[in-house]
Length: 515
Image 1 (cartoon, rainbow, N blue to C red):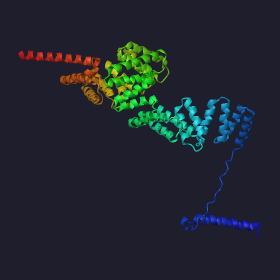
Image 2: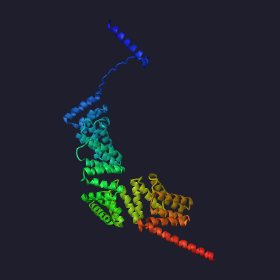
Image 3: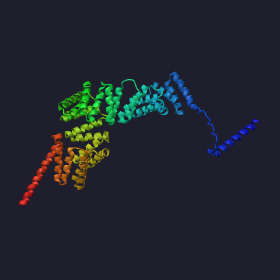
Image 4: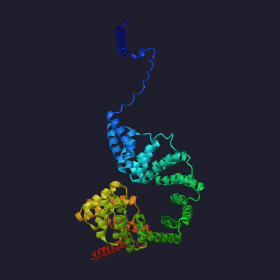
Protein backbone atom coordinates (compact mmCIF):
# COMPACT_ATOMS: atom_id res chain seq x y z
CA UNK A 1 0.00 0.00 0.00
CA UNK A 2 1.37 3.37 -1.04
CA UNK A 3 2.08 6.01 1.60
CA UNK A 4 -0.37 8.37 -0.19
CA UNK A 5 -3.23 5.85 -0.05
CA UNK A 6 -2.49 5.00 3.58
CA UNK A 7 -2.66 8.75 4.48
CA UNK A 8 -6.06 9.09 2.77
CA UNK A 9 -7.44 6.13 4.76
CA UNK A 10 -6.22 7.53 8.09
CA UNK A 11 -7.54 10.99 7.20
CA UNK A 12 -11.07 9.78 6.37
CA UNK A 13 -11.07 7.46 9.39
CA UNK A 14 -10.32 10.51 11.58
CA UNK A 15 -13.14 12.55 9.93
CA UNK A 16 -15.57 9.66 10.48
CA UNK A 17 -14.63 9.33 14.18
CA UNK A 18 -15.10 13.08 14.73
CA UNK A 19 -18.49 13.04 12.99
CA UNK A 20 -19.69 10.05 14.98
CA UNK A 21 -18.42 11.55 18.28
CA UNK A 22 -20.35 14.76 17.60
CA UNK A 23 -23.61 12.96 16.80
CA UNK A 24 -23.56 10.19 19.36
CA UNK A 25 -25.47 10.64 22.64
CA UNK A 26 -23.35 10.15 25.77
CA UNK A 27 -25.55 7.32 27.12
CA UNK A 28 -24.94 5.26 23.95
CA UNK A 29 -21.22 4.93 24.69
CA UNK A 30 -20.73 1.52 26.23
CA UNK A 31 -17.05 1.74 27.07
CA UNK A 32 -15.33 4.86 28.46
CA UNK A 33 -12.64 6.34 26.33
CA UNK A 34 -9.37 6.20 28.27
CA UNK A 35 -8.07 9.64 29.27
CA UNK A 36 -5.00 10.66 27.38
CA UNK A 37 -2.55 12.45 29.71
CA UNK A 38 -1.04 15.29 27.75
CA UNK A 39 2.01 16.85 29.42
CA UNK A 40 1.52 20.57 30.06
CA UNK A 41 3.04 22.87 27.55
CA UNK A 42 6.23 24.46 28.68
CA UNK A 43 5.76 28.19 29.10
CA UNK A 44 7.11 30.05 26.14
CA UNK A 45 9.34 32.95 27.20
CA UNK A 46 9.17 35.96 24.90
CA UNK A 47 12.40 36.36 22.97
CA UNK A 48 12.81 39.98 24.08
CA UNK A 49 12.32 39.00 27.73
CA UNK A 50 14.90 36.23 27.43
CA UNK A 51 17.43 38.52 25.74
CA UNK A 52 17.03 41.27 28.36
CA UNK A 53 17.15 38.73 31.18
CA UNK A 54 20.44 37.31 29.89
CA UNK A 55 21.90 40.80 29.52
CA UNK A 56 20.71 41.69 33.03
CA UNK A 57 22.10 38.51 34.53
CA UNK A 58 25.47 39.11 32.86
CA UNK A 59 25.51 42.67 34.28
CA UNK A 60 24.77 41.28 37.76
CA UNK A 61 27.74 38.93 37.46
CA UNK A 62 29.88 41.91 36.47
CA UNK A 63 28.58 43.84 39.49
CA UNK A 64 26.92 46.56 37.41
CA UNK A 65 23.65 46.69 39.40
CA UNK A 66 22.29 49.76 37.66
CA UNK A 67 22.62 48.29 34.16
CA UNK A 68 21.33 44.94 35.44
CA UNK A 69 18.21 46.63 36.85
CA UNK A 70 17.59 48.41 33.53
CA UNK A 71 17.76 45.16 31.52
CA UNK A 72 15.71 43.20 34.06
CA UNK A 73 12.98 45.85 34.14
CA UNK A 74 12.73 45.55 30.36
CA UNK A 75 12.54 41.76 30.74
CA UNK A 76 9.77 42.16 33.34
CA UNK A 77 7.76 44.37 30.99
CA UNK A 78 7.83 41.55 28.42
CA UNK A 79 7.21 38.78 30.99
CA UNK A 80 5.43 40.46 33.97
CA UNK A 81 4.57 37.21 35.79
CA UNK A 82 8.09 35.83 35.97
CA UNK A 83 8.95 35.29 39.63
CA UNK A 84 12.60 34.76 38.76
CA UNK A 85 12.95 38.14 37.05
CA UNK A 86 11.17 39.89 39.92
CA UNK A 87 13.45 38.29 42.52
CA UNK A 88 16.55 39.45 40.66
CA UNK A 89 15.05 42.93 40.30
CA UNK A 90 14.44 43.13 44.04
CA UNK A 91 18.06 42.16 44.66
CA UNK A 92 19.37 44.77 42.21
CA UNK A 93 17.39 47.64 43.72
CA UNK A 94 18.35 46.65 47.24
CA UNK A 95 22.01 46.66 46.16
CA UNK A 96 21.47 50.14 44.71
CA UNK A 97 19.83 51.32 47.95
CA UNK A 98 16.57 51.98 46.07
CA UNK A 99 14.30 50.67 48.80
CA UNK A 100 11.01 52.00 47.39
CA UNK A 101 11.59 50.39 44.00
CA UNK A 102 12.56 47.11 45.65
CA UNK A 103 9.39 47.28 47.71
CA UNK A 104 7.30 47.87 44.61
CA UNK A 105 8.66 44.72 42.95
CA UNK A 106 8.21 42.81 46.19
CA UNK A 107 4.53 43.76 46.11
CA UNK A 108 4.27 42.45 42.55
CA UNK A 109 5.97 39.22 43.53
CA UNK A 110 3.68 38.91 46.56
CA UNK A 111 0.60 39.14 44.30
CA UNK A 112 1.97 36.38 42.06
CA UNK A 113 3.64 34.02 44.54
CA UNK A 114 0.75 33.05 46.82
CA UNK A 115 2.53 30.16 48.58
CA UNK A 116 5.82 31.90 49.33
CA UNK A 117 5.78 32.35 53.12
CA UNK A 118 9.17 34.05 53.25
CA UNK A 119 8.20 36.72 50.72
CA UNK A 120 4.93 37.61 52.47
CA UNK A 121 6.54 37.50 55.92
CA UNK A 122 9.43 39.76 54.84
CA UNK A 123 7.10 42.19 53.13
CA UNK A 124 4.87 42.24 56.23
CA UNK A 125 7.89 43.17 58.36
CA UNK A 126 8.87 45.97 55.99
CA UNK A 127 5.36 47.45 55.92
CA UNK A 128 5.04 47.23 59.71
CA UNK A 129 8.40 48.93 60.31
CA UNK A 130 7.37 51.77 58.03
CA UNK A 131 3.97 52.24 59.71
CA UNK A 132 1.81 50.83 56.92
CA UNK A 133 -0.36 48.67 59.16
CA UNK A 134 -3.03 47.72 56.61
CA UNK A 135 -0.42 46.54 54.08
CA UNK A 136 1.41 44.66 56.84
CA UNK A 137 -1.80 42.89 57.89
CA UNK A 138 -2.46 41.82 54.30
CA UNK A 139 1.03 40.32 53.93
CA UNK A 140 1.02 38.56 57.31
CA UNK A 141 -2.40 37.10 56.45
CA UNK A 142 -1.00 35.83 53.14
CA UNK A 143 2.05 34.42 54.93
CA UNK A 144 -0.13 32.46 57.36
CA UNK A 145 -2.28 31.11 54.49
CA UNK A 146 0.71 30.01 52.39
CA UNK A 147 2.40 26.59 52.28
CA UNK A 148 3.82 26.13 55.79
CA UNK A 149 4.98 22.53 55.45
CA UNK A 150 8.66 23.46 55.19
CA UNK A 151 8.60 26.64 57.29
CA UNK A 152 10.20 26.86 60.72
CA UNK A 153 7.44 26.91 63.36
CA UNK A 154 9.14 29.78 65.16
CA UNK A 155 8.75 31.96 62.06
CA UNK A 156 5.09 31.01 61.68
CA UNK A 157 4.51 31.82 65.35
CA UNK A 158 6.23 35.19 64.87
CA UNK A 159 4.04 36.03 61.85
CA UNK A 160 0.91 35.12 63.86
CA UNK A 161 2.08 37.23 66.80
CA UNK A 162 2.72 40.27 64.59
CA UNK A 163 -0.69 39.79 62.97
CA UNK A 164 -2.42 39.57 66.37
CA UNK A 165 -0.59 42.72 67.55
CA UNK A 166 -1.71 44.66 64.47
CA UNK A 167 -5.31 43.49 64.88
CA UNK A 168 -5.29 44.66 68.52
CA UNK A 169 -3.76 47.98 67.50
CA UNK A 170 -6.54 48.36 64.95
CA UNK A 171 -9.18 47.61 67.60
CA UNK A 172 -10.15 44.16 66.27
CA UNK A 173 -9.50 41.80 69.21
CA UNK A 174 -11.91 39.17 67.82
CA UNK A 175 -9.44 38.66 64.94
CA UNK A 176 -6.38 38.72 67.21
CA UNK A 177 -7.59 35.94 69.54
CA UNK A 178 -7.55 33.09 66.92
CA UNK A 179 -4.03 34.13 65.87
CA UNK A 180 -2.77 33.91 69.45
CA UNK A 181 -4.49 30.56 69.97
CA UNK A 182 -2.92 29.23 66.75
CA UNK A 183 0.48 30.03 68.26
CA UNK A 184 -0.38 27.78 71.21
CA UNK A 185 -1.13 24.93 68.76
CA UNK A 186 2.41 25.24 67.40
CA UNK A 187 3.79 24.44 70.89
CA UNK A 188 6.46 27.15 70.64
CA UNK A 189 9.44 26.97 72.98
CA UNK A 190 9.58 29.45 75.84
CA UNK A 191 7.15 30.85 78.37
CA UNK A 192 3.53 29.95 77.61
CA UNK A 193 2.37 32.11 80.52
CA UNK A 194 3.04 35.27 78.54
CA UNK A 195 1.00 33.95 75.63
CA UNK A 196 -1.98 33.21 77.90
CA UNK A 197 -1.58 36.74 79.27
CA UNK A 198 -1.81 38.17 75.74
CA UNK A 199 -4.91 36.09 75.02
CA UNK A 200 -6.45 37.30 78.27
CA UNK A 201 -5.72 40.92 77.35
CA UNK A 202 -7.33 40.39 73.95
CA UNK A 203 -10.45 38.96 75.61
CA UNK A 204 -10.61 42.06 77.85
CA UNK A 205 -10.55 44.27 74.78
CA UNK A 206 -13.25 42.09 73.22
CA UNK A 207 -15.37 42.53 76.35
CA UNK A 208 -15.40 38.81 77.23
CA UNK A 209 -14.33 38.99 80.87
CA UNK A 210 -15.22 35.36 81.67
CA UNK A 211 -12.72 34.00 79.13
CA UNK A 212 -10.23 36.72 80.01
CA UNK A 213 -10.34 35.55 83.61
CA UNK A 214 -9.71 31.92 82.59
CA UNK A 215 -6.64 32.87 80.54
CA UNK A 216 -5.19 35.27 83.11
CA UNK A 217 -5.67 32.91 86.07
CA UNK A 218 -3.97 30.20 83.97
CA UNK A 219 -1.12 32.65 83.29
CA UNK A 220 -0.82 33.46 87.00
CA UNK A 221 -0.47 29.73 87.74
CA UNK A 222 2.16 29.22 85.04
CA UNK A 223 4.11 32.42 85.66
CA UNK A 224 3.33 34.14 89.00
CA UNK A 225 6.13 36.67 88.43
CA UNK A 226 4.49 38.07 85.28
CA UNK A 227 2.96 41.00 87.15
CA UNK A 228 1.35 42.71 84.16
CA UNK A 229 -1.03 39.74 84.11
CA UNK A 230 -1.90 40.54 87.73
CA UNK A 231 -2.93 44.07 86.69
CA UNK A 232 -5.09 42.71 83.86
CA UNK A 233 -6.61 40.25 86.32
CA UNK A 234 -7.39 43.16 88.65
CA UNK A 235 -9.27 44.85 85.79
CA UNK A 236 -11.31 41.66 85.25
CA UNK A 237 -12.13 41.27 88.96
CA UNK A 238 -13.17 44.92 89.12
CA UNK A 239 -15.44 44.46 86.10
CA UNK A 240 -17.03 41.41 87.75
CA UNK A 241 -17.60 43.27 91.01
CA UNK A 242 -14.96 41.41 93.07
CA UNK A 243 -13.32 44.60 94.32
CA UNK A 244 -11.30 43.12 97.19
CA UNK A 245 -9.67 40.63 94.82
CA UNK A 246 -9.01 43.46 92.37
CA UNK A 247 -7.23 45.45 95.11
CA UNK A 248 -4.98 42.48 95.98
CA UNK A 249 -3.90 41.94 92.37
CA UNK A 250 -3.37 45.65 91.64
CA UNK A 251 -1.30 46.08 94.82
CA UNK A 252 0.83 43.08 93.79
CA UNK A 253 1.55 44.81 90.49
CA UNK A 254 2.37 48.17 92.14
CA UNK A 255 4.89 46.50 94.46
CA UNK A 256 7.01 45.53 91.45
CA UNK A 257 6.19 48.57 89.28
CA UNK A 258 5.86 51.52 91.70
CA UNK A 259 6.36 54.12 88.94
CA UNK A 260 3.36 53.01 86.86
CA UNK A 261 0.93 55.91 87.27
CA UNK A 262 -1.92 54.05 85.59
CA UNK A 263 -1.87 51.38 88.31
CA UNK A 264 -1.92 54.02 91.07
CA UNK A 265 -4.86 55.77 89.40
CA UNK A 266 -6.69 52.45 89.13
CA UNK A 267 -6.04 51.68 92.80
CA UNK A 268 -7.26 55.14 93.84
CA UNK A 269 -10.56 54.39 92.12
CA UNK A 270 -10.77 50.92 93.69
CA UNK A 271 -10.17 52.24 97.20
CA UNK A 272 -12.87 54.88 96.65
CA UNK A 273 -15.30 52.10 95.78
CA UNK A 274 -14.41 49.97 98.83
CA UNK A 275 -14.73 53.11 100.99
CA UNK A 276 -11.10 53.45 102.01
CA UNK A 277 -10.56 57.19 101.41
CA UNK A 278 -7.10 57.31 102.98
CA UNK A 279 -5.66 54.71 100.62
CA UNK A 280 -7.53 56.30 97.72
CA UNK A 281 -5.97 59.69 98.45
CA UNK A 282 -2.52 58.11 98.86
CA UNK A 283 -2.62 56.53 95.38
CA UNK A 284 -4.22 59.60 93.82
CA UNK A 285 -1.42 61.79 95.17
CA UNK A 286 1.16 59.31 93.91
CA UNK A 287 -0.44 59.39 90.47
CA UNK A 288 -0.21 63.17 90.34
CA UNK A 289 3.41 63.10 91.56
CA UNK A 290 4.53 60.60 88.90
CA UNK A 291 2.70 62.42 86.09
CA UNK A 292 4.10 65.80 87.11
CA UNK A 293 7.62 64.36 86.95
CA UNK A 294 6.95 62.94 83.50
CA UNK A 295 5.51 66.19 82.17
CA UNK A 296 8.41 68.24 83.57
CA UNK A 297 10.86 65.83 81.93
CA UNK A 298 9.17 66.43 78.57
CA UNK A 299 6.69 63.57 78.17
CA UNK A 300 5.28 63.41 74.63
CA UNK A 301 2.39 61.14 75.63
CA UNK A 302 -0.85 63.19 75.49
CA UNK A 303 -2.63 60.68 77.76
CA UNK A 304 -0.27 61.63 80.57
CA UNK A 305 -0.94 65.34 80.13
CA UNK A 306 -4.71 64.85 79.91
CA UNK A 307 -4.87 62.57 82.98
CA UNK A 308 -2.77 64.97 85.04
CA UNK A 309 -4.94 67.91 83.98
CA UNK A 310 -8.12 66.03 84.98
CA UNK A 311 -6.67 65.15 88.39
CA UNK A 312 -5.60 68.75 88.99
CA UNK A 313 -9.01 69.97 87.88
CA UNK A 314 -10.64 67.59 90.40
CA UNK A 315 -8.55 69.35 93.09
CA UNK A 316 -9.79 72.71 91.74
CA UNK A 317 -6.26 73.57 90.55
CA UNK A 318 -7.56 74.97 87.27
CA UNK A 319 -4.61 77.18 86.39
CA UNK A 320 -2.12 74.33 86.93
CA UNK A 321 -4.27 72.05 84.78
CA UNK A 322 -4.37 74.71 82.08
CA UNK A 323 -0.58 74.99 82.10
CA UNK A 324 -0.24 71.23 81.64
CA UNK A 325 -2.58 71.21 78.63
CA UNK A 326 -1.00 74.25 77.00
CA UNK A 327 2.32 72.41 77.21
CA UNK A 328 0.66 69.35 75.64
CA UNK A 329 -0.32 71.42 72.60
CA UNK A 330 3.36 71.91 71.77
CA UNK A 331 4.25 68.21 72.01
CA UNK A 332 1.32 67.01 69.88
CA UNK A 333 1.50 69.60 67.11
CA UNK A 334 0.88 67.88 63.78
CA UNK A 335 -0.05 64.57 65.44
CA UNK A 336 -3.49 62.97 65.39
CA UNK A 337 -3.46 62.87 69.22
CA UNK A 338 -3.70 66.66 69.08
CA UNK A 339 -7.46 66.29 68.71
CA UNK A 340 -7.87 65.00 72.28
CA UNK A 341 -5.50 67.63 73.66
CA UNK A 342 -7.47 70.48 72.05
CA UNK A 343 -10.71 68.92 73.34
CA UNK A 344 -9.41 68.77 76.91
CA UNK A 345 -8.14 72.33 76.61
CA UNK A 346 -11.59 73.44 75.43
CA UNK A 347 -13.11 71.80 78.54
CA UNK A 348 -10.67 73.66 80.78
CA UNK A 349 -11.34 77.02 79.13
CA UNK A 350 -15.07 76.33 79.52
CA UNK A 351 -14.57 75.61 83.25
CA UNK A 352 -12.82 78.94 83.85
CA UNK A 353 -15.29 80.93 81.68
CA UNK A 354 -12.84 81.77 78.91
CA UNK A 355 -15.54 81.40 76.29
CA UNK A 356 -13.72 82.70 73.24
CA UNK A 357 -10.80 80.28 73.76
CA UNK A 358 -13.18 77.37 74.44
CA UNK A 359 -15.03 78.01 71.18
CA UNK A 360 -11.75 78.34 69.27
CA UNK A 361 -10.43 75.03 70.65
CA UNK A 362 -13.65 73.18 69.79
CA UNK A 363 -13.50 74.49 66.23
CA UNK A 364 -9.89 73.29 66.01
CA UNK A 365 -10.95 69.83 67.22
CA UNK A 366 -13.59 69.62 64.47
CA UNK A 367 -11.08 70.85 61.90
CA UNK A 368 -8.79 67.96 62.84
CA UNK A 369 -11.62 65.42 63.03
CA UNK A 370 -15.00 66.57 61.61
CA UNK A 371 -16.64 63.32 62.79
CA UNK A 372 -15.67 63.68 66.46
CA UNK A 373 -19.23 63.65 67.81
CA UNK A 374 -18.28 64.63 71.38
CA UNK A 375 -16.91 67.93 70.05
CA UNK A 376 -19.95 68.46 67.80
CA UNK A 377 -22.25 68.08 70.79
CA UNK A 378 -20.06 70.26 73.03
CA UNK A 379 -19.93 73.14 70.54
CA UNK A 380 -23.65 72.83 69.79
CA UNK A 381 -24.51 72.96 73.49
CA UNK A 382 -22.04 75.83 73.98
CA UNK A 383 -23.95 77.89 71.37
CA UNK A 384 -27.33 76.91 72.81
CA UNK A 385 -26.34 77.96 76.33
CA UNK A 386 -25.48 81.41 75.03
CA UNK A 387 -28.47 81.66 72.70
CA UNK A 388 -26.26 82.27 69.65
CA UNK A 389 -25.78 80.48 66.31
CA UNK A 390 -28.85 78.36 67.07
CA UNK A 391 -29.19 76.94 63.55
CA UNK A 392 -25.54 75.87 63.64
CA UNK A 393 -26.08 74.51 67.16
CA UNK A 394 -28.98 72.39 65.87
CA UNK A 395 -26.87 71.05 62.98
CA UNK A 396 -23.96 70.15 65.28
CA UNK A 397 -26.10 68.36 67.88
CA UNK A 398 -28.06 66.46 65.23
CA UNK A 399 -24.76 65.33 63.72
CA UNK A 400 -23.64 64.05 67.12
CA UNK A 401 -26.94 62.17 67.51
CA UNK A 402 -26.42 60.54 64.12
CA UNK A 403 -23.38 58.83 65.67
CA UNK A 404 -25.09 57.98 69.00
CA UNK A 405 -28.91 58.30 68.73
CA UNK A 406 -29.57 57.18 72.34
CA UNK A 407 -26.93 59.31 74.04
CA UNK A 408 -28.72 61.10 76.90
CA UNK A 409 -26.31 64.04 76.94
CA UNK A 410 -26.83 64.60 73.21
CA UNK A 411 -30.62 64.39 73.57
CA UNK A 412 -30.40 66.92 76.39
CA UNK A 413 -28.41 69.25 74.09
CA UNK A 414 -31.04 68.88 71.36
CA UNK A 415 -33.85 69.64 73.80
CA UNK A 416 -31.97 72.68 75.04
CA UNK A 417 -31.42 73.96 71.46
CA UNK A 418 -35.18 73.64 70.80
CA UNK A 419 -35.91 75.47 74.06
CA UNK A 420 -33.63 78.36 73.10
CA UNK A 421 -35.17 78.52 69.61
CA UNK A 422 -38.66 78.53 71.15
CA UNK A 423 -37.65 81.37 73.49
CA UNK A 424 -36.24 83.37 70.59
CA UNK A 425 -39.09 82.68 68.12
CA UNK A 426 -41.94 82.50 70.67
CA UNK A 427 -43.00 79.07 69.31
CA UNK A 428 -44.95 76.86 71.72
CA UNK A 429 -44.53 73.88 69.39
CA UNK A 430 -40.77 74.01 69.89
CA UNK A 431 -41.27 74.15 73.64
CA UNK A 432 -43.23 70.91 73.43
CA UNK A 433 -40.54 69.41 71.22
CA UNK A 434 -37.86 70.52 73.70
CA UNK A 435 -39.77 68.87 76.56
CA UNK A 436 -40.15 65.66 74.56
CA UNK A 437 -36.41 65.40 73.91
CA UNK A 438 -35.44 66.31 77.48
CA UNK A 439 -37.76 63.68 78.96
CA UNK A 440 -36.24 61.15 76.56
CA UNK A 441 -32.76 62.26 77.69
CA UNK A 442 -33.70 61.67 81.35
CA UNK A 443 -34.55 58.05 80.51
CA UNK A 444 -31.11 57.51 78.95
CA UNK A 445 -28.87 59.48 81.29
CA UNK A 446 -28.72 60.20 85.03
CA UNK A 447 -27.63 63.84 85.24
CA UNK A 448 -28.88 66.79 87.35
CA UNK A 449 -28.40 69.14 84.38
CA UNK A 450 -31.20 67.33 82.53
CA UNK A 451 -33.63 67.78 85.45
CA UNK A 452 -32.67 71.44 85.60
CA UNK A 453 -33.53 71.83 81.91
CA UNK A 454 -36.83 69.95 82.19
CA UNK A 455 -37.80 72.25 85.07
CA UNK A 456 -36.93 75.29 82.93
CA UNK A 457 -39.26 74.14 80.15
CA UNK A 458 -42.11 73.39 82.57
CA UNK A 459 -41.58 76.82 84.12
CA UNK A 460 -41.79 78.47 80.66
CA UNK A 461 -45.04 76.59 79.99
CA UNK A 462 -46.45 77.95 83.24
CA UNK A 463 -46.44 74.54 84.91
CA UNK A 464 -44.73 75.66 88.09
CA UNK A 465 -45.51 72.64 90.22
CA UNK A 466 -44.03 70.30 87.61
CA UNK A 467 -40.94 72.52 87.44
CA UNK A 468 -40.62 72.40 91.24
CA UNK A 469 -40.93 68.58 91.17
CA UNK A 470 -38.05 68.23 88.68
CA UNK A 471 -35.74 70.58 90.57
CA UNK A 472 -36.46 68.96 93.93
CA UNK A 473 -35.83 65.55 92.34
CA UNK A 474 -32.39 66.74 91.21
CA UNK A 475 -31.50 67.92 94.74
CA UNK A 476 -32.73 64.69 96.34
CA UNK A 477 -30.96 62.36 93.91
CA UNK A 478 -27.68 64.24 93.45
CA UNK A 479 -27.27 66.35 96.58
CA UNK A 480 -25.08 63.84 98.44
CA UNK A 481 -22.96 63.01 95.37
CA UNK A 482 -22.52 66.49 93.88
CA UNK A 483 -22.43 68.57 97.08
CA UNK A 484 -22.07 72.25 96.21
CA UNK A 485 -21.76 71.68 92.47
CA UNK A 486 -22.63 74.72 90.34
CA UNK A 487 -25.64 72.95 88.77
CA UNK A 488 -27.18 72.24 92.18
CA UNK A 489 -26.55 75.81 93.31
CA UNK A 490 -28.43 77.07 90.25
CA UNK A 491 -31.33 74.70 90.99
CA UNK A 492 -31.52 75.92 94.60
CA UNK A 493 -31.64 79.51 93.37
CA UNK A 494 -34.43 78.65 90.93
CA UNK A 495 -36.43 76.97 93.68
CA UNK A 496 -36.00 80.01 95.92
CA UNK A 497 -37.24 82.32 93.14
CA UNK A 498 -40.13 80.00 92.45
CA UNK A 499 -41.08 79.99 96.14
CA UNK A 500 -40.89 83.79 96.18
CA UNK A 501 -43.15 84.02 93.14
CA UNK A 502 -45.53 81.50 94.68
CA UNK A 503 -45.64 83.52 97.91
CA UNK A 504 -46.23 86.74 95.98
CA UNK A 505 -49.01 85.11 94.00
CA UNK A 506 -50.68 83.86 97.19
CA UNK A 507 -50.51 87.35 98.77
CA UNK A 508 -52.08 88.87 95.65
CA UNK A 509 -54.89 86.33 95.80
CA UNK A 510 -55.47 87.12 99.48
CA UNK A 511 -55.52 90.83 98.73
CA UNK A 512 -58.02 90.40 95.88
CA UNK A 513 -60.29 88.20 98.00
CA UNK A 514 -60.13 90.81 100.83
CA UNK A 515 -61.11 93.56 98.39
